[in-house]
Amino acid sequence: MTAYWIGLVNVTKPEQYAEYGKLAGPAIQKHGGKFLARGGKSTTLEGAQHGRIVVVEFPSYDAAVKCYNSPEYKEAFTKQVGAANRIVTIVEGQP
Image (cartoon, rainbow, N blue to C red; front, top):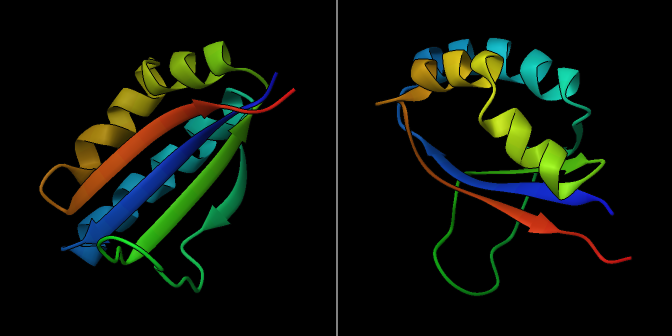
Protein backbone atom coordinates (compact mmCIF):
# COMPACT_ATOMS: atom_id res chain seq x y z
CA MET A 1 0.00 0.00 0.00
CA THR A 2 1.33 3.45 -0.89
CA ALA A 3 2.29 6.09 1.63
CA TYR A 4 2.85 9.82 1.39
CA TRP A 5 5.16 12.40 2.86
CA ILE A 6 3.30 15.64 3.34
CA GLY A 7 5.46 18.65 4.05
CA LEU A 8 4.18 22.07 5.11
CA VAL A 9 7.10 24.44 4.78
CA ASN A 10 7.84 28.10 5.35
CA VAL A 11 11.26 28.86 3.89
CA THR A 12 13.16 31.61 5.70
CA LYS A 13 16.51 31.35 3.87
CA PRO A 14 15.90 30.39 0.22
CA GLU A 15 19.54 30.02 -0.81
CA GLN A 16 20.31 27.69 2.08
CA TYR A 17 17.08 25.74 1.53
CA ALA A 18 18.04 25.23 -2.12
CA GLU A 19 21.08 23.27 -0.93
CA TYR A 20 18.70 20.95 0.93
CA GLY A 21 16.64 20.48 -2.23
CA LYS A 22 19.69 19.49 -4.28
CA LEU A 23 20.34 16.55 -1.94
CA ALA A 24 16.81 15.70 -0.82
CA GLY A 25 15.39 15.08 -4.30
CA PRO A 26 17.89 12.36 -5.25
CA ALA A 27 17.69 10.79 -1.77
CA ILE A 28 13.90 10.59 -1.99
CA GLN A 29 13.97 9.17 -5.52
CA LYS A 30 16.57 6.57 -4.49
CA HIS A 31 14.03 5.22 -2.00
CA GLY A 32 11.19 5.04 -4.51
CA GLY A 33 9.68 8.44 -3.78
CA LYS A 34 7.82 10.29 -6.52
CA PHE A 35 7.04 13.99 -6.16
CA LEU A 36 3.33 14.69 -6.68
CA ALA A 37 3.46 18.32 -5.54
CA ARG A 38 6.55 20.36 -4.88
CA GLY A 39 5.86 23.97 -4.03
CA GLY A 40 3.36 24.97 -6.70
CA LYS A 41 0.36 27.25 -6.31
CA SER A 42 -1.79 26.41 -3.26
CA THR A 43 -4.70 27.82 -1.27
CA THR A 44 -5.17 27.07 2.41
CA LEU A 45 -8.85 26.76 3.26
CA GLU A 46 -8.45 26.07 7.00
CA GLY A 47 -5.58 26.63 9.42
CA ALA A 48 -2.29 28.44 8.94
CA GLN A 49 -0.97 29.19 5.46
CA HIS A 50 2.36 27.60 4.50
CA GLY A 51 4.52 28.98 1.74
CA ARG A 52 5.43 25.60 0.28
CA ILE A 53 3.51 22.32 0.20
CA VAL A 54 5.26 19.09 -0.76
CA VAL A 55 3.62 15.71 -1.37
CA VAL A 56 5.75 12.65 -2.13
CA GLU A 57 4.33 9.22 -2.92
CA PHE A 58 6.23 6.13 -1.77
CA PRO A 59 5.54 2.49 -2.64
CA SER A 60 4.92 1.69 1.04
CA TYR A 61 4.82 3.18 4.53
CA ASP A 62 8.04 1.32 5.39
CA ALA A 63 9.79 2.78 2.33
CA ALA A 64 8.77 6.31 3.38
CA VAL A 65 10.09 5.81 6.91
CA LYS A 66 13.27 4.15 5.63
CA CYS A 67 13.92 7.11 3.33
CA TYR A 68 13.47 9.66 6.11
CA ASN A 69 15.91 7.74 8.31
CA SER A 70 18.43 7.05 5.51
CA PRO A 71 21.95 8.47 5.57
CA GLU A 72 21.29 10.23 2.25
CA TYR A 73 18.23 12.05 3.53
CA LYS A 74 19.82 12.83 6.90
CA GLU A 75 22.66 14.58 5.04
CA ALA A 76 20.09 16.63 3.11
CA PHE A 77 18.16 17.37 6.31
CA THR A 78 21.17 19.09 7.88
CA LYS A 79 21.20 21.63 5.01
CA GLN A 80 17.72 22.96 5.84
CA VAL A 81 18.23 23.40 9.58
CA GLY A 82 17.72 27.11 10.28
CA ALA A 83 16.48 27.74 6.73
CA ALA A 84 12.84 26.74 7.13
CA ASN A 85 10.06 25.96 9.56
CA ARG A 86 8.53 22.62 8.61
CA ILE A 87 5.92 20.06 9.50
CA VAL A 88 6.54 16.70 7.83
CA THR A 89 4.10 13.81 8.19
CA ILE A 90 4.03 10.30 6.75
CA VAL A 91 0.55 8.93 6.10
CA GLU A 92 -0.48 5.58 4.71
CA GLY A 93 -2.60 5.60 1.56
CA GLN A 94 -5.87 3.81 0.93
CA PRO A 95 -5.96 0.30 -0.53
